[in-house]
Length: 606
Image (cartoon, rainbow, N blue to C red):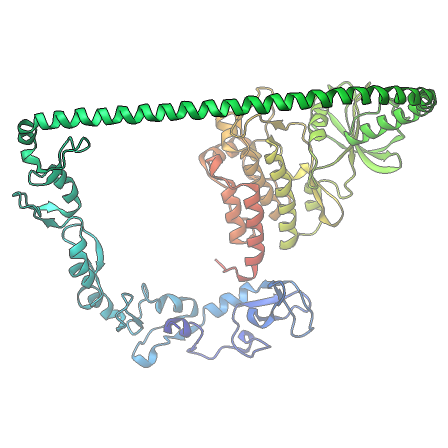
C-alpha cells in the first residue's frame, strides 16, 4: 500500500481538539460528521454506514436509537471547523517542520505536487529504487536504468536496453546495403522489398515461363535474353496454344455429352410424373363430385336454422363490438353522443388557462375525473390537436385521456384526476422536498420525456405548472396542446409568428434561430430541475424578460440554488449547453440522477 495514503488518516493535532469535535460513538475526531434526523445526533459517516449484504446499497443506522435506513445530512459547520484545526506534517520524524490546517495536509504530502520534501516513493519506471522527492527528477532523467530513450532512426520511445538491443535488428528506418551487392546503400529496412523489385542483379523468371522457358535471368540481362532466344520462345508459344485448344475441345465434347444425358433423364421423369398425376386427378374429380353432392344436401337443411340464429344475435353483437372499439381507441361512441347520456358531471372549475381553456373537476360514469374544454366562443383547435396526439401516446408519466367528446359544441377532453394539482402550486404550498423526493420527481419526468422523444414528439412547454401531482408524489406531464410530432429524427420545427413563447424557459436555438428540436425540451427540463430545488421560484426572477433573453443567448446561466448539491447543479449545466446535440438524452439524465442520489453521502463541501 502507498505510504502516503496511510498518513492521510493519521492526524497529529498541534492542540488537543475540543470535546465538540469528538464522535460520540468511536470517541475519535469526526471523519465527515453526519447529522441524523431521528434524534439529531452527529456521528462519523463511517460509524453510521450500514451496507445491505444482498443488494450492496448503503444505508444509515443510528447508534443511539438503533433505527435503520434513517436520513442523514453532512454537518457543514462542524466539518469546516475540523478542517481548520492545526496539525503537524506526518513526516515530522524525518525532519519536516510543516504545520498548517487539516484541509491543507493532503496537498502538502501529495507525491507529485506536494511541498513536503521528506515523502518517499518508488521509481515509476520499475527499477525499485526508493526516492525522496528532491531526488526524483534527477534520478528519472539521468540515473534510472529503465528510463525511456528515443531511437535515433525511427524516434520510437522505449526502454534503453530494448532500443540498443533487439530494436536495432528490427528498426524499419535502419539503413542497410543491398544484399545483391548492386552498389545501392543506406536503404531503409522497410524499403528493401521495393528495392529488390527494381534491383538489376535480382534473378527473375523469363516472361515466357508460362509457355515453357525455365531459365532464371538477372533483370539487367532480360532484354538480351529475349533477343537471343526469340525463335525458341515462338516455338514454345505455338506448342502452348495447340495444347490449350485440344484441352478446350475435349472439355466441350464431354460437357455436351453430359448435358444430353441429363436432358433425356429429365424428359423420362416428367412424362412418368404427368401420367401419374393425370390418373390421380381423374380419381379426385370423381370423389370430389360425390362429396360435393353429399355436402350440398346436408348444408341445405342447416342453412335456414343458422340464418335464423344469426339474425337474432346480430343486433346484440353489433352493439357490443361498437362499444369495445370505442373503449379500445378512446373514440367517442357512435350511439351516445350527448353529454348527459355519458353521465358526465361538472362540479367545479379548477383552473382557467391563458390559452382560452378551462379545467373542471367532475365525474364520468361515477369516476372522479378532470375535464378540459375551451371557454365560451373560443376555437377548439388546440384541444382537438391535443386529443389527436394523446390518442397515439400512452405512458405512465403522461396524463391519461379517459375519453373525448368532439361531436357538437363545446369539445370535451376527459382526463384522469390528479389530487395534488400542478407541481408549481405544490412546491409553493408545501414544505421543501427532500433530496430523494426531488430525484424521484426528476426521474419520473425524464421517463415521460424519453417516451415523447422516442415518438419524435417535442412538448415545447416543459414547466412546473404543466406537471400534475397525484398521490405519493406520482407525477405526470400535462398540456400537449403545443406539442409537435416530427417526421424525421434530425428534423427541426420552425417557430410560427403567432406562437407566444415563455422566454425564460426557451433554449438559445429557439430565441436566436426560431427553431425547435428534440433537445430543446432538455434545456427546459434543466430549468424545471432548478425550480424543483428552488421551491418553485421563477427562473431569472431578478431580470426582465429582455435581460433574461440576453443572458440565455450569450450563455450566462443561473447560479446554483441554495442547498443544491454540486453534482446536481452540474447535471443542470449539462442540460444548458449551447449546442443542442451536446446535451444528454433523457435516458442518460435518469442514470445521472441515480448517481447524484448514490453520491450524496460522499459529496465534498465546496
